[in-house]
Amino acid sequence: EADIYQTPRYLVIGTGKKITLECSQTMGHDKMYWYQQDPGMELHLIHYSYGVNSTEKGDLSSESTVSRIRTEHFPLTLESARPSHTSQYLCASSEGLAAPNEQFFGPGTRLTVL
Amino acid sequence: QKEVEQDPGPLSVPEGAIVSLNCTYSNSAFQYFMWYRQYSRKGPELLMYTYSSGNKEDGRFTAQVDKSSKYISLFIRDSQPSDSATYLCAMSDRGSTLGRLYFGRGTQLTVWP
Figure (cartoon, each protein chain N blue to C red):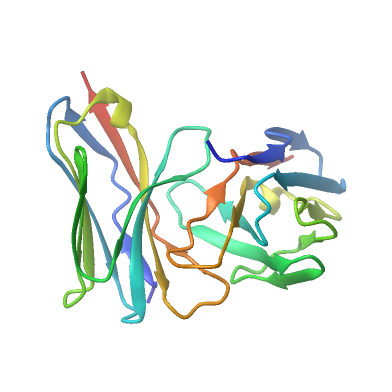
């Protein structure tokens, strides 16, 4: 079982609130990723990190921001939540040194913005 | 055109059936082909992967890649209710320093007793 954790697992929050989704891994992986997953749709990469102090935006435009101050921690923040942010957010990590680059996923955070 | 196409189903089969799941792709640079399994309210986990063309077997599961047709398949023999999950194909090219994966939409499979 992968050692990657996400909290909270479920979050229901009102419009305009600031939220932070936590993601931690204990595998020492340099590469970490945030995906957005909606029912019946592809996993969309919204942020990624090569390592500490390295963050980049993914393909899907997102109003969220991320930080990578420690190897094991990759939190995602929404400054002002809106109903359009309602989705499942998945965090993943990989060693990334050699193909096929298996990514290990956390259990996800299901976010609902009212 | 999407990088990876996968029929989302849903697919419902009786226990013991042979299941065939498929994906097509457009990027000829893809070299690694993976199948992830995602149970309800869980994150995806890697089931198996194949490099380039050919077949790979792991117990009741067989992965096939046909690069000439840009088509990959996952076969499940003697399917069990515990196989009920969403199956996502994923692909990457060899040169990606990020180790970027491109996912299909996932096929939702239900195996009923």
